[in-house]
Amino acid sequence: MTDLKIGDIVEATYNSGTYVGKIVADKGNFWLVEILAVLKHPMQGDLHHPGEVEGVAFHERKALAFREKANVRKRFTERYEGEIPSYAESLKHAVETYKSQLQKEDTPFNKLSLEKIADLEKYYYHKIYG
Image (cartoon, rainbow, N blue to C red; front, side, top):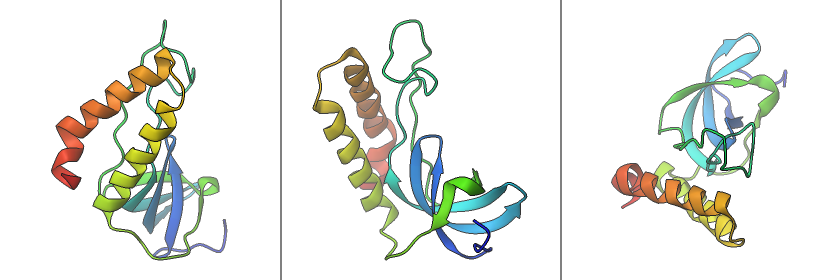
């Protein structure tokens, strides 16, 4: 998007997660975005083989941290309209939404994804949203 500039608040997709952030630098084809909130938690597993658990590296993916900076492709960035939610509340909502989606269908992929999310909550997220 060419009408965006440094300082704008954007919705940005990065490694299957979606975030609200502030553009802090122009890096050619990328914006350097400072993360302010989580709209969609990143998918667990192998992004190149979604839904599979056999014969793939099943990755545990944390959401980007508050104020972490990420190089986001400009084509995956658009202006964010609305109030910016608190990072902790947005992370909790994104995790709960993702868990709810995974619980709808009993598959090996969803079970393993739920295990990874439980680990993230236990070892990382509980410090953020209790």
